[in-house]
Length: 467
Ligand SMILES: [Zn+2]
Image (cartoon, rainbow, N blue to C red; front, top):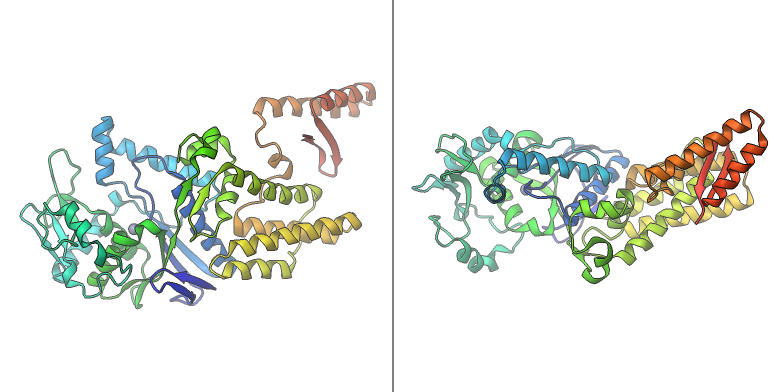
């Protein structure tokens, strides 16, 4: 596999630290609000990476943290008078529900900051011991960026940003403009934890370094983990600071590869009809099925900025419809072995830094060819079994195509409507069993008036709404 390393700014061959094993860490959400489409895109990008690596035969350990203590959460709590624990529990649950709806596989490790205070304190102690951190009069512990010779070597961005940083934080008692807080001394009304350097709470950057070190890192390699990922907005200062902390505390590098996904922009005018100006995943899910949304968001290469608009979403849905229409033709067929050439071509495309355009073209071609072949050879059972197996491969790697084909085309119908139709179908089948063909025919006519077509398959009677 070849991946684009944001630090080297080029595509590089991927070689894991340990044969056959890949350890990935992706920065997770700060749970003070609902997740937006930017979170969805990042989660989907790294979910695709994880699934691709697994399909290539690697054992993947995937970690994503939950930041459940942070200035933003405290601010939200003061504004809403809602206790911090209730805010973080609520938004963590919402986040995980959104992820499930988008078909994101659960993380193998999902550490929370509030449950990792000991690990965080341990790393700050190490940094104080190594002379890379200092404590000010109020008890805030700062990372001393001048003690890290390689500071800025990751993003190369901080050099230009001196002015911005000093403008924002010039009033604090840190020694250098680029220094950042590892441990924030307690103020009144704050959430506080005890530590050898006084009561306080962790800064955001130390959280990721400490969790990686405690739960995911190799102890005896030049790097702690294989791949560190996140949104492009995290490259500086967050990832730069993570890298510096790990370097100074452990004398080795944090990650062998760094990957960053692009932004999501909303085309306001075109979206206003259905989504308003909302950026929230939960609002998008009210309008679009999670799988359709996933397929749309996965369709643009992860490094390219994404312009969200309804026209493109509907075009993307049509592409997914085609896959499900093929699946419907194969209803009730059990899978055998996928076409090896198809699987190879799909993995080859994704092995090139997740080249999704080529991957989708490989899928389109498979669908077209399968339909053409089935037109000529509608009874070739062996072929049908291998095509169903191909669709399972797509589901495994892209996380789409896994629904029952008939259910897929019922997306958007209300539960009441579906129930009513199911009831009529059952009554017709009962009538047929009693050999009451008049009754059966009249129900069939009634269904027809509702736009419902019936088909008798080896799996029983199935129905679909004809547009
Ligand atoms: Zn992080």
